[in-house]
Image (cartoon, rainbow, N blue to C red; front, side, top):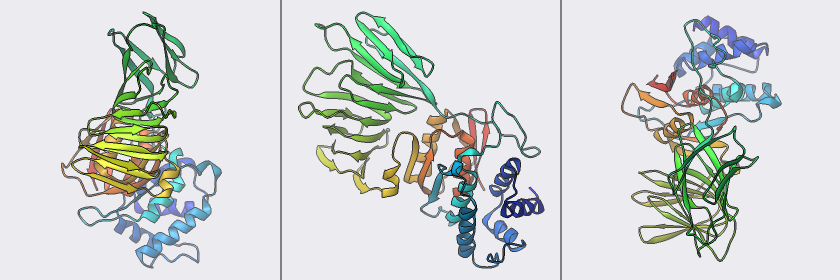
Amino acid sequence: MEIKRFQYLLTRYFENSLGQTEKQELLYGISHFSNEEFVDILSEMDFPTDFDATISEEEVSRKLTTIFENLLLDERLNDVPKIKKEKKSANGLYFWTGIAAAFLVLFGASIYLLTINNQEQVQANYIVQDIEPAQSMAMIVLENGDKITVDSTVTGLVYDKGGLQVYINEEGEVLYKDLNEDEQVQYLTVNTPKGGHTKLKLSDGSVIELNAASSIRYPVNFESEKREVFVEGQAYFKVSPDKDRPFIVHSKKQDIQVLGTSFNLVSTDEYAKTTLIEGSVEIHSGGNKYLLKPGQQSVVAENVNIKYLKPEIMKVWNNEKFVFDNSSFKEILREVENWYDVKMVFYEQDFDNIELSGTVSRGVRLSELLKVLEINTNYTFEIEGRRVLVKRY
């Protein structure tokens, strides 16, 4: 984008006269100018009398943020992604979190450059495909080998064989009825693919939201003194209280013992991360026990680390948002890959040492989420089919 065109769009913005297409074009320009170029561009522009673009970078950031926040009071933009960088990258570069947050408030989750259904060119030679967020879908594998594929279009009875009935209720939850009173407890496994998620209601009333590329194995009915499930990937739990039957979640790195609570679990080959929302849980790992309190997060890897999360992070923690709290760039991109069923392809093999904090809706299109990451890192992203090309500025 030419600098004069970019300055014109910024001026239009301050005059509160930007059209929707111009907003998209401005967003494109923002992501393709460096910090130094952006300062030079501002210094050559005429701004309102209370704005001096020749002052320090920090003051420019603060004033821009104030101006944007004062101008953008549209209620439609109240629920937009806000994210900030917590640490410098390995090469010492940094991005102005104030400016980034301000532009996110401006464009938020409502802006996208191009969708598959509406291939409208925002700027010559700049065409981007878009990918929808994960949809409700899963595969249920029964002990007899039968497989049931379910998605958001299915409700009611989906399986009835050998005394086992499987339902999808109006809330999209998978339910079961085992009519074989005298037989052994039947176990089943639910798998979600990349780009899919599902919600389950267990026989005790506990609800589990299973995220993309995850699996859970559990009995149709809990009939012993324990309620045991086996999970890999990511899942959000709301466990029904039962003081006589503790709820136990098994994963590769740890076991979690619960009486009644809500928490989020991420289990990978490298680590297990448990975030407690309310109640209490006990982490069992390596022969040791660790009691978590609400607002705490444990990470079990080679060692066990427990910390309190920021109150603003805990307030929005649910399975409808990506929640990052000093999350590594690699960890974030892995979650993006799973949720949108894409493959990240890197021009360079080494990562900058970036950690991000904030929340973004899981309901936004891929381009919208990538734009948030672009503004807050020194990387650009280009969607090509199911691949995302990742390149350092």
